Image (tube, rainbow, N blue to C red; front, side, top):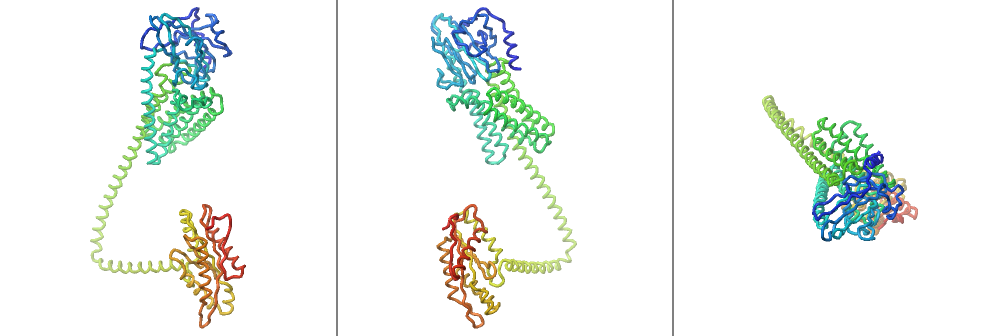
Length: 620
């Protein structure tokens, strides 16, 4: 469609038999050479300058446009321009090409036989003047006439957008433009930092999406205006080619997420979510095309995606506004700015409307207005939330005051009714308090009983499991060692068989008391089951745990249990596991390792201490 439109425009241009001469007076006003240019489309793209110079005048057609724009298509165009210096002195002029995204631009006739070669598919240092756009210096002697030939080939918009200025006018123009561009990108940076700070404080993802949208939009503009190729990647030609559609699709992606959150589409119709998911998928597809597909395909896809998303966002905004969602008013205005700016930019790129300073900076102007409006809308959203919160607080306070009034009336009524029963109420209250205190004490005793072993008075296994989990988590955080002792009374069945179960119970109580005496305040000793005991030793390495285990073993062996005049000798087999817990360590693992060490102690003859050793653990 675009190629057909371009062909029609070229066919409508009148044929010419001569070259229009552009006279350059000594003026500070820029001159647009487009209407004075002639164009010849190179069908094969392989023509040399000698061939082009010898073309008959009938092969050339008038451009008749001030921007020399021929749309998209990747064709090669030759432009011819005849210049004349009517002054009586040598004049220095600058031919500035305002489209920094041209792939290749060659100029003949600027400086003798020297050929100007530039483009964003050539290294940046090849340019004669270090500038974000293509700047072609030109010196004309007094009364001199010169013919220039420009060769333009690009996969993007074949838009020359050239202007001629004296060297002094160009310097003044450049200072003004750098000031405006600095203000533009400075405003974007302020909005980015401001909204990112709000996200850090509030953790509201809408501000994160908005910040990413501002950042990617800034990158898009930085690329479109030529700053990125000049300052960020002057040698990365492959990235320069794909960065423009990539940044456009990336900004669209974050714009979709931002719109979905701020308009609260999730709470609306389900079709909003389905369309949003489709648009997000389309953005990802365009990003993939930018990285893998031909540049022209990715560029057109990014433009189509941008227009569709902008129109859909505008429609969603109007629907939400119609549904009574107040913040949608400002968003409707903001999207209108972006849609108008995008249409101006796309139509200018296709050549349908003439390229100018307005169309060149349309997206900057519209985008900046849109971002400012969105920032105001976000601030209004905060104010609306604060107003809703204050309203809710006022309603809550009013309700509380009403409850207090009702409560006061109820108390007065109760006082009148129960004045004669006050003493009995006090007595009943005192009785109830005593009963509650007794019940609380009984519950406390019951809780203690549920945590302790009834025979030995030690903590039971449930407490051991709970405390081991807590101590293990603390050891992981502090990276301090933790030790587990698993202890078993040797030949305890023989004690029960020879002396009776009452003597066995006495031995269990005796062993528990002897071991408890040697425990530290922050250690925990529990009855594990039967004649087995377990101890949790926090902040204790293997050497300390082994030493304590040996003390427990020696102490019990040297202090037999006295029961009904009978001295019953006892001994302990102890398994030790100590380590600095790793992230994947767990309570069951520690108990299992300590139990394995205990079985080794029993297998080695009992009445001894064995330590668990494994290379997979970080033992102390």
